[in-house]
Each structure stands twice: as C-alpha cells, then as structure tokens.
Length: 425
Image (cartoon, rainbow, N blue to C red; front, side, top):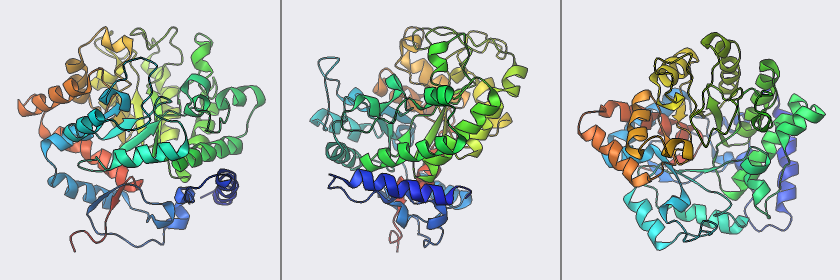
C-alpha cells in the first residue's frame, strides 16, 4: 500500500497519545492490511464481536461471500430481516425528555434488542460519555446480537454538528477538516492522516462503522452544506475523499459515503423537506459519479442514498432518490458498479416522516434496491412491514437474502463479525 509507512507511524503516535491516562487495551485495530496477510485462515462459524487487527486475516471477496451464504442458510427470516435495520439506540427506549441520556442499556432496551434482531445501532452524544463507559455499552450491545455481530456506528465528519468528537468532552475533537482543507489547502497526505486519526479514536472507543464522510461536491447555492464537502470541483473532491476513506479503512474502520447521487447543489434544508436536485444525468455522470467511484475504489463499505428528488433523472420527478429503483439499482448498483451495502438516509427526519408512512418507505426502499434501513421513525413497525411484505410475496425472500449477504460479507471482511475457526470442528 502506497502509504504503508505513514499509517504505521501515524498509528503509533496516536496510540501513544491515547494511552496516556487510559487503562484500556492497546487498540490493535490500526494494523494495516499488509501486516495481516500472514494470518491463518479460519473455518466458518459465528462468534459475535470484534477481532483486533493483529489477529485479522485478509479475507477475499469470494471467501467472505461463501461464508456469508453459509451463515444465511441457518438464519430465520426474522433474523435476516432484522439484519437490514440500523437503529438509533435511544429508539429502543426513548428518554422521557428529548435531552435525556442513555449511557447504559436499560431493561427495555435489552428486551427490544432481543425481540428485534437488528443489524446495527447508532450511538450519539446521548449515549457516549467516556471511553470506558462507551466500550462497556458496546460490549453489552454486542452480547445481544442475533444472527451476527452488529454494526456500531457513529457519525464523524470532523465537523461541528456532524461530529461525535465535537460533542463529547472526553473525545479528541479533530477540528473541522473539510473547512480546514478549503481554507488552508490540506494536502492529500494530510487528509489521509486525518482519516487515520478518526479511525483510531473511534475504534479505540469500540465503534466499527462511520456514517461518513460526505462524498458530495459543494456549491455556493448551499454554503452550509458546502462546508461539509471537501471542495467544489470534482477532481479535488475525488482526491481528498479517496485519501480520507483510505486513512479510515487502513486503520480498520468501515466507511460510508453520502448522499448519492449528491445534494451539494440543492438549496435548502434536506432534513426538513423533500428537495430536488435538478442536475441532468450527464452532469451527474461527469461530476458526482466519478467522485463516488473514486471513494468506492478507495474501499468504502457503504453508500448512503439521498432523500432528495432527482427530477431530471427519474420518471416520477418527486420521488426521493432512495425510493427510486432507477437511481439505487440502475445508476449506483449497475452503472457506478457499487457492490457493497446501500443504505437509506436516516428515515426519522421530518422530510421523510411528514411525507410517507414508515411502512411505505421501508418496503419501497428495499424494492428500489436498498440493503439497509437507517433509523426508521418507528423501527418495530418498519420491521413488521418488511417481514409481512416477504411473507405475503410482495418482496421475494431472495431479495432479502442478497441484501443480508452483502451486509454479512462486509462484516466478515471488516472483522466485525468474527468467524470462530473452532466452530463446527
């Protein structure tokens, strides 16, 4: 890997800094793929949890595919459908006050996670206080996993409202990296180093998935959103995005690009209303698609869809991208060639909830080609709706199997789902 020496040096420095005043184990998850190639192969079997990077073998796409297929054969339909949901932890037992905190699992959370076998949880500053508490919480969550270990996700864009580290006192805030890039001209290497720092800290605290970075091209029509982007030109955004993704991935963190096919040129608040990206398909191909392709080539695990319409691309000009088979399947899956996990945007935003029922968005998103449902307004209703759609024949179970295979394959390759070599012996 072209930055092998850099990632090793950066990792050592950051780990030394983290070790000061910390009683936790050394976060070996920053070991690079080259250093793990000598690992022994493992036989299929499930052991929920995470392996340190020093123990990680490099698992090929074909091997991970086969292991995922074997696991799916032993999963119930309920477990498979559950794997397709990533929920915010507080949705499992909302605090009485909106500002309430949930730093440990409540009895109701445990009950809900046992009865609703989700594929992942999202933690916010309402769940994260310090490293010891967070690692304990994540361990407790993983012990409840059914059908495979969970994604435990944070949102770390290195920027204000979308940075977990900026909201948690005990975490090291790495600063507003996209803005710093735009104002100070950070190099590709420096952006890569920032990706390493992000991954080391999140892995140190127990996270395995980042719902970031933004892969869109910024525009002056929406300066607030542009501040979350790496630039306003496709070429520079591609370079910086790829560097950030490589830094995170080389340090053991699963990565999500967002929001396909791009919302940088959309004016307004996309969380409040269903807005419209009026770019033509040709413009998207010449700009956004190339950026996402480079981010995917750098190792991105997931791509999150936009909740904005793409009126010049879709037959239904008011349909959000994540509900459009033309955008999800025809463009992202087939034209751009992404074979990883496609996610919906968060479905608990006002833009979605005031326009659609939870049952509709969950079922239609899967029909459009999404693999993972992110934070639906009512997770249990969404889960029930998708389960009923399969049982009634509205969605073929093969569609579910394909999505779950992608999710499990990624978890296996990223050592989120650890396969026990002694299982089955």
